[in-house]
Every structure is written in C-alpha cells, then in structure tokens.
Amino acid sequence: MNQYIHLASEALWLIFLLSMPPLLASLFVGLIVSLLQALTQVQEQTLTFVPKIIATLLALMLSANWMLGRLIEFTNHAFDLMLRVGRGI
Image (cartoon, rainbow, N blue to C red; front, side, top):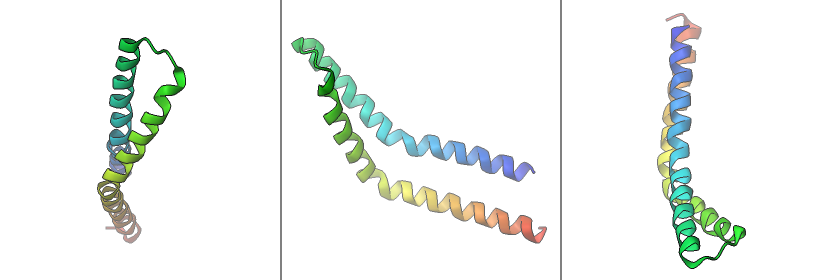
C-alpha cells in the first residue's frame, strides 16, 4: 500500500515538473507584455494572448523531448511496480 502512495506522490511531482516550462514561459511573456502595455498606455486585452500562445507552444516544442523522457521513465516505473505487486514480491 505504501508503494502506491509513493507512486501517487511521484505522479503529482511529475505533473508539477512537466507543467512548469509552458507555465513559466507564459508567465514571463505575460509580464513583459503587461509592462510594455503599461509603459505605452495601450490597454488592449487581446494583445497578450498571441505572444503567450506562441511562447507556450515554443516552450512545449523545446521541452517535449525532456517531457517524453520523464513520462516514459515514470510509466516504466509504474508498470514495474504493478508487476512486482502482481507477483507478490
């Protein structure tokens, strides 16, 4: 039972790690665009969406290989745990 709790904890930590690159990219681009809007006094709400989407997609493309590696590693670990529990080890 303790193994499953540890696996769930690892899953939550992995979700946190995998969500960080696109979220941080969107955060920094949103902050920069907001500062530019404040400096130029352009208060268009839709102006922030396109740069954020582009930054998020770019972050996903750049970190996709790392993300996939981490997901494969976690999946292999989860299946190994299931096999060990199923065999009674």
